[in-house]
Image (cartoon, each protein chain N blue to C red):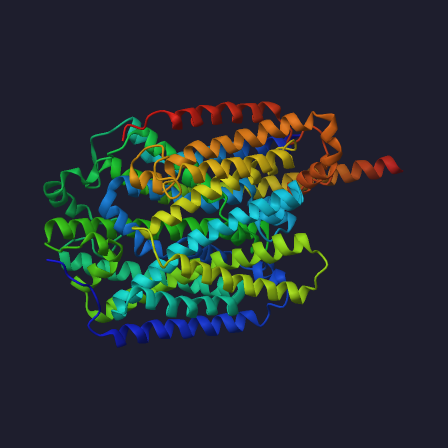
Length: 89
Length: 548
C-alpha cells in the first residue's frame, strides 16, 4: 500500500510541478509584474530561466524519486513472495 | 525593396551538406547491420545508453522548426510565441514520469502497441490511423523546411528541391532504421547545437552585443534599444485564457506524439531512461534559449539595423541573419545544421509511421505473417510515409510550424487520454477509448480552420491554425468521454462478455512493476470524477468568447 500511494502521489505532484515550472508565462499573464532582472523584463526572463534550469532540476529530482519508488515496489513484491512461500509450507 | 536571399557560392553549401550526409549514411549503415528484427529496427534493441538517448531525444524533438519556423513566428507574434515554446521542454520528462517507464516495462514498440493490449484491436487501429496522420503532419513541416533551405542554398525552385532532396532523405531514413537514427540523432544534436549557437555568437558580436560569448542568455544590453524601437516587443498581448490553452494543446499534446514516446522505449533500463530525461532537459533548454535569442536578434535587426525581411521570407530568418552578418562558409554550416535538424525529426516521424503500419495495423489484422515480410512492410511504410509528406508539402501552409503544432493537438485529443487514463485507471475500457478517439478527433478536425474555415473558436488565424483553441475544447471532451463511457459500459451486464476486465487489470499491475493484484490499486473513482469535473470546466471555458 505504501509504495502504491507514493507512486500515485509522486506522479500527480511531479506532473503539477513540471506544468507549473514550464508555464510561468501563464502565471505572469494573470499577475503581471513590472520589474527588471539581469537587464531583462522579469516577465520575459523568468519564464525562460524556469523553463530551462527549473525543468532541469525537476528532472534530477524526478529521476531520483522514480528510481527509489521502483526499488520500494520491488521490495514489496519480495515480501509478498516470501509471504506466499511461508503459506505454502 | 524586396530582396531575394540566396548563397552566392552554392557549391560551398552543397559540399558541407554533402559531407554531413556521407557521415549520416556511414553511421546509419554500420548501425543498421545489426537491425535484423523489428525490435532492432524500431527501438534499437532497447539497448541505448543514457547520454546518447538524451541527445537523440532532443534532436528528434528539435525539428527544423528550431532553425526556421520558431524564429519566423517570434518575428510575427513576438513574446507570446516564446512563452508558448518554453513549455515544449516538458514533453520527455512528462512522458517518462506519467507513462514512459510503464510502457518500457511492458516492452512496447509504440504507444499504439499499449493501446492494442489495453483496449483491443479496433481502438488500436483507430488510434494508429490518427497517429499516422499526426506523424505525416509533423513530417510535412520538416519537408517544407528542407525545401526552403535548399531554395535558399541553391536558388532552385521550391518544388524541385522538395522532390530531389525529399526523396534522398527518405531513402537515407529507410536504410538507416532506428539504431542508425539514434546514433545519428545524437551526432545531429551536437551539430545542431554548434551550428546554431556559434554563428549566433558571431552575429551578436557583429551587432555589438557585449554578451556574445554566451548567446542563449547574455543579450540584455540590447534590451533598451529594443524597447525604444519596438516598445511592444515584451507585451504578453493575449489573455490568460490564451496562455492556459497551451497546456491542453501542447503540453498534453506532446504526450501523445508517437515518435517521442518511442525514444523512451529505446532506453537500456528504466534508470537509464530517467537519466536520459535529465540530459534531454539540459541540452534542449540550452538550444531553446538560444532560439529565443536568435528571434530577439532577428526582431532587433529588422527594427534597428535596417535589415528588411518580407513575410514570404520570414521562415528563413536564421539563415538571412547569417548571410547579413557572417561569412558565407558560416552560413553553409548553419544550413547543414538546419538539414541535420530536419533529418533527425523526419527519421523519428517516418520510423513511427513504419512501426504503426507494420506492427500496429498489419500485425494486428494478420498476426501470422512472417517476421521477414513484416520487416519488409515496415521499410515500405517508412518510404511511403516520406513520399506522402513530400506530396502534401507541394502546397504548404504559410508558416511551417503551424502544421507541426496542429499535429500536437491532434495527438493530445486522440491518443494522450487513451494512454494516460489507460495506464492509471483500470476501469477505462475499449468503448470509452473508441468514443474518446473518434468523437474527440472529429471535433478537433471540425473546429480547425483547415476543413471548415467558417467553424472556428477564436477567428484569430494563428491561434486556430496551431490548434490552441481546438485542443482546449477537444482534449477535455476526449477525457470526459473516455471516463464516462467506460464507467457506464462497465456497469451494463449485456456488454460484460465483450470486455476483458481481468486481462486489463493484470496488464496495469504488471506495467507498474507489481507481481500481485490488489483491487485498491489504480481504481480511484474519486480521481476519475475530479478529472471529469475539471475537464468539463475547461471545455465550457473554451466555448466562451475568446475576445481576440
